[in-house]
Length: 437
Image 1 (tube, rainbow, N blue to C red):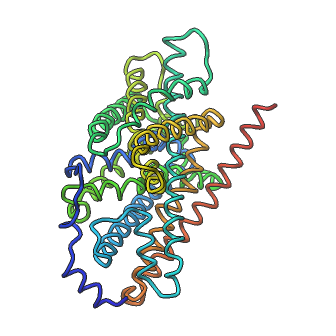
Image 2 (cartoon, one colour; image 1 turned 45 degrees about the vertical axis):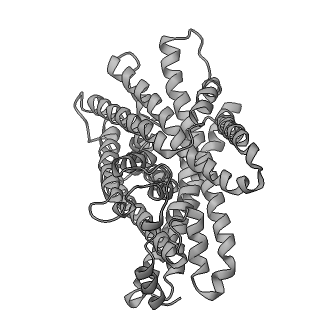
Image 3 (tube, rainbow, N blue to C red; image 1 turned 30 degrees about the vertical axis):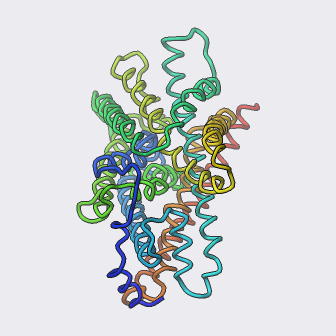
């Protein structure tokens, strides 16, 4: 695969001109979906991340992780577009991009193209299973606080609220097109921003004391910071479906493009809430800052209601990625007359499965750390670095700077994976042992 071939394909084939999307999304809708994919429960977990890192290291770390994650999304989309031009296809999914990069890479790696495709798809699938589990537990936790205080006289465990949520989630997840999910994303974004504003109201409602807050926290807890921020920042699994369904996909990258605007907004919101949330609540922070708000004040009650509804409306966006992969692998083997019924049943099954995991392990902070460190490190850091290197093997830039840059990204991804998973598993064992005792 030479540079001349790439340039020739660039001239002959423009994938944007050949895309035939049934329900294309506008730039505004794509921006709303992208922000919602990266901006959710992770935003409200940022103060806890800062309590693990210290406020000084937290600010620097958040900026660096945002730049690295944004860069990885950028290079993956660029690689996907280049693969489209080489193969003369209008669009490629996340897994198909991995397959194409290996197919058009060095000859020695081409036999691994199918394996790369399947590995990427299964990693993506299990990532969003984890995300849906987190959203189930977080929604249940928020509901529990409100219901225990204002509705029920019985203190029901979080597991019961996970069970209650199964029916509404099953109904929401029967929506099959991103275009029809965009209004839910828009409403969820408004509710999330309102929650963000209310959190700031409580954070700045009294004098903030910095003297007892750490500039650099316990280094042993730093992997938990990395895991939480990577989980919060990454929405790479939803990037290709969003970019592929845009009416004007050429506006996704560039300055200012949809990606740059989305990542800028996300970075500002994350840094602000993480820093000042830690300054206000210190070491007593929970998995979501809304759980630290007072239960008797009406603004706090509104915040808890808003975040519960926001996460509820966000759930189908992440669930879309999970079902999209499942459909791709199963639909060719199902007769046409049964496909609709299988879609309905499988969507309900996956909702119940994710709810079941939430019921079995309602440990919000630890599940966030596992998903962030294991799955998002693989999808958002390791795979993009490898895929760009493989695809551009014959043209890695002056002094092969692209190779060295991607080696750094991949090593960083593996460090996040190993340290984050180890710490999360140890935390889970400690908590479960305390429950047994």
